[in-house]
Image (tube, rainbow, N blue to C red):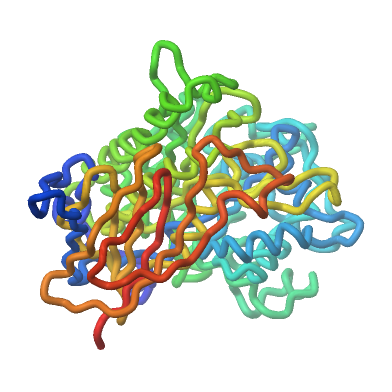
Length: 517
């Protein structure tokens, strides 16, 4: 079965020359634009180039048991509802997509999380430890997505990705087949599905995005490439038979992308890969434990260079698909730095600036990268979360981590198409996008202590009013529930067209420039 042509993020002619738009900051010209100490220019060709997917700032929720109570801590069991402070914080973050699943789906049976809550069986979390109550299931997750304005992305149980250790627990099977995945699609999307209606949901839950396989290639004890490709076709066909309009993502990391595209390419819309990485490869790593506090300059430099590893990973996957028309989905991405709760340095504004560079890099690959993230979603321990949940409830309101503050900033100020940045001043990392009547710049000042001034040059195109939405703070400031409303705040200021704009040290800025009609 071929995919419907009207699928909004289905096949596009997206694999064009990377050099046109994915110009790495290190390769940009550093030449001065004038003599005598003149201010350098940010030179942008305002012509729209590649479409930017609305899903570049996805959030990912996975029940993590005793490791990080990402779901159980999110649910107010006294009210049988989501924590209100989490909903409020997520609305400010405004993700366009929320993903449910991860390795958890290798042993997740979706029917245990639907129907009357007092009849839902608890389950062992075989990966992360502890017990999941299943009080949050399909309908509750979709309800959360609707409250915050996000499209849901669901990961199916892909026969436990072939991992035998997840296939049985407490004498019960935990592996789900293609029929079970197809039944889930019907439960959510079929207007006449009787099972859903008996559970009190007369209208469809409407989940249009589904992922088959999660980190399948990472485990030698799981499916091999040929088995994965064959079973992906089986799952995709069964699921599309229930709803031909859904968008399906297959697994394509670890060099698997070309073969997956060859075997399953007609049945899937995107290939997924993940990146969780430690940017610090020094013999004496500065980011470990509390060491980052001892040497702020070394910490800053490591974090400013982290985007390069992100770029290498994306290029590795996209280059393997040269000539193949299949978009990519980075459905998990974040730092993985050893240390307490995935390392406290990620609470610093220095980490926020680093993530600004990574998000800029994602935009440079927007011609092929259609889903991306830079954080897990929420929890009460891991510093890689976008939203932190003080516990117990009442000890403080949910707040945005530095990575989420940059995501929030960019998410609210971005155009529909990329445009080419031809030149940037030293120290600035800049990407640009275009809407109907506005140009948007995402500007990271990579200098720890030095502001940078620049003039915008759009060639012959005149500019109108301009405004900067900016976060600038001490790189070593750390956010917590005690100061979340005072540090790393987005501030707006008007900019004068044709005049130098100052970008403070260690700042991330979204600039909006009005363009002539």
